[in-house]
Length: 576
Image (cartoon, rainbow, N blue to C red; front, side, top):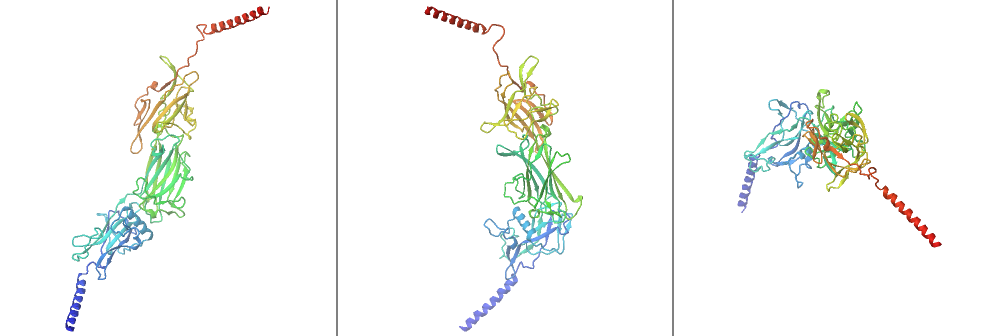
């Protein structure tokens, strides 16, 4: 028995030694394996501290020294998780990449690439002879202020004999140790040429926000300015500010009042600004906002600057790759240009191309513009081209029509149920506009119900209307004339192009087109009488051409006198 046991022990020792030998012979994918990284689709100029590389996923090796899998680096564990909260180093959405980039820039330690980077003009590619461990690397390009690069990833990974790997496919057969090799990493970087600015204008109609392509004088217009993407500035000379210049017809509402100015950070792909706000920025801490006037002292200017303090410090590096959304309000005022004139709002974005260098040659700009149109029914476009659209008239002859002053009308709209909504305009006050080419004081909307009074020429001056449907009804006739009870339907139509510029507009009353302009050219003179609002004189009893009621009055009085005389005569006889 002892001999048998000794034999088994000897065999076990031999097998144990052979297992070790087998393991040593089949060790594959070791920590000594190294790979390279190339960065493609980038411009030259990042060689000097413009490229930062952060390890976000690490390769793991077992006790035998063989590759066994990957794990997320500790700093990024809270970001790289799946829907179940489990570690996920495979899925990298744009949102996750932004979070990784912000985390790396704020708390990460970049790998020191001691060999430096070499640029190939032909391939638009950076490469280095520096050796990197197996894993996944976040590439952050911070030195190219002229071009804003998105965060990118380069993976140095093992593949088995079938070419599969578990960084990309999640199915590397690490038990199949035949033919496992390490692949170099390449980052393809997506870039936008520079930060861009876009603007839109909206107003509220019946509780709903709609584009403010057209508006009433007195309407509050909300402007939204977007800066996308937010650049990263690593130098000491950053520039990023938006300068908004409003036309004379727009009055900036006080930015110091709550609700009149908002500056927030949103995800770059939050197209409709309906997602979660990433951050709400604080005035005088994260940015400065100043309201000034131009040299003519007529145009309001709003400047929002993201470089604050002395010396100026850039406040947005934590939000690089996202977008800034600025909102503020203005009122379409009584100086608004009418019809084709439009009321422009221009925004210019100023940014630095290279924050490490001073000088105007490093500056860049982008701009956008909105247009808001408002229309009148009489008086301003090319002199008197819309004159006599609406005219209060009396009696007509074959050659003339009497024009009536002093008729009072009410202007109103209707809600979805067809109920009358008084046209209120609390901003507009009596002012001066052109009538027949001459200055003339007119009442615009001088009452809470938007009443309009015909002038000495019978004209109804209606200024500052958005495109839409309106209703006009006489509520007080001139002395001696009957009231016209007809409800006139006025339609102002406007068509704008993709840039918001006016292409055409027209005015119709009771489905009769009275005026139309297309591409700045008047289509035809209006038929004047189609805009007439006639009144008739009140009929009176005749005072000439017959005795009328006089004879009846005299006869009645005579009968009463005769009756009285007979009465007193009868009483005297009775007394006798």
